[in-house]
Image (cartoon, rainbow, N blue to C red):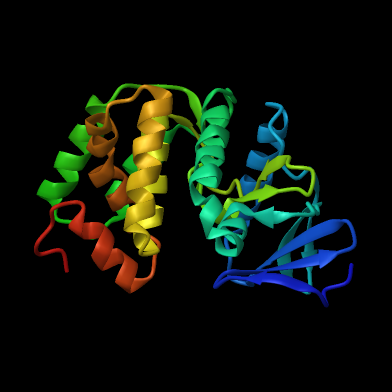
Length: 249
């Protein structure tokens, strides 16, 4: 495999293109279990019939774990909006429709969203009282088994030249409540400073899914606390404001 064409670089991984393959190479200290879980999630999502890059193999390159999938030619919805801002409303509607399609699928072997969030809340540096309140709130939320992406952002949807959408990056996939997934997407918009787009997205999601906005908002403190565990310091400060924490250091 050739690793001379970098198409994306993140703090924990570098993504290359080699012909018709995408090679995601993780840093040396990246968890083997997390790599294998991401590959397994991708394989399970493939079985639900969604358009996702097909998993080819999991391997090691120069001592680093790597996931190899088929390369999808196209541009992300984020790129398309940057290139044609006048099409933002149309593209956000497509974005929401794709997320609703994900939520219509089922994959019974995926990790349960509530289990994952309970673990994440326990891992935060929040005080015991706040953690207890969050665990209690989470336990009181309805239990669903909808397929959730867990990191559904504009840059994780590729639109091919013929208009077909492909959803990438399934590391955080779970089965659970769709409104928790929407809350996560809303927070991702806010984290990137796109408050106006966040509001437009949430309004559209609630309208198309016939979901009360207040219901999605009930998930925000839970999702924000979960998201705060592994993030940049500046993101952590922002997220914990959603948990109504004053003294969290």
